[in-house]
Length: 149
Length: 62
Image 1 (cartoon, rainbow over the protein chains, first blue to last red):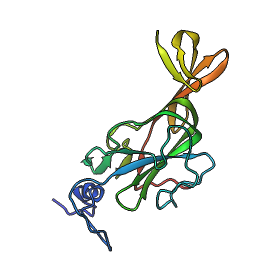
Image 2 (image 1 turned 90 degrees about the vertical axis):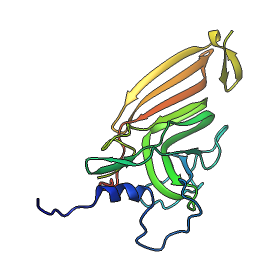
Image 3 (image 1 turned 180 degrees about the horizontal axis):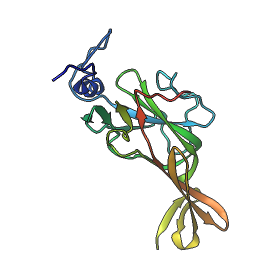
C-alpha cells in the first residue's frame, strides 16, 4: 500500500454541506439546510462567473413571476468514485408566467445574503401565459448540476 | 369542455391549435408548445432539459 496525494472525497461532500471554514465564516443558528432560490435572467443580462450574489438587475419581470425566483432544495450531497455531487431535487417550475426572453437561471443561497452558486444557460425562451420548466441533469457523478471532481 | 389558460383568458381547448417544436443544442433539449387561437399565439410553454451540469474543478470561461 502506497501513499497518494489526494483531496479526500469525504471532504468534497462536506464542502457542499458547509462543514469546513478556511476563512471567516458565518454563525449558523441551526443544522438545517439553507434556503436556495433560482432566479431567471434576460438574454441582455450579464450573469456569469463574476456574479457574487443575486441581483434584480437583468432579472426577468412579467406576469406570474416573483422577483428573486423560486425556492428549491438540493438532493443530499453524496459521492461516487472521487466526485462529490448534488442537484436540485426537482424541476424548476415557473407556472403561468409571461416572461422572456430568458437564457439563464442563477441558483443562489437565500439564507446567506443571496450569495451566488451557479448559473445555467440555455437557448433563449419566451413564455406567454404558460409554464417554464427547467429539468436539471441526472443527479450522478459527472452529470449532476454541481460536481466536485 | 376543457378550458386552457391563455393570455386572453380561459379558452376552450377545442378552439386552440397546438404546435410543438423540439430543438437541441450543447446546453439542452427544448420542447416549446405554442397554443394558437385564430392563428395568434395566446400561450407558449417551454420545457428546458439541461444536458449537463457544472464541475467545480472545470469552470468554463466567461
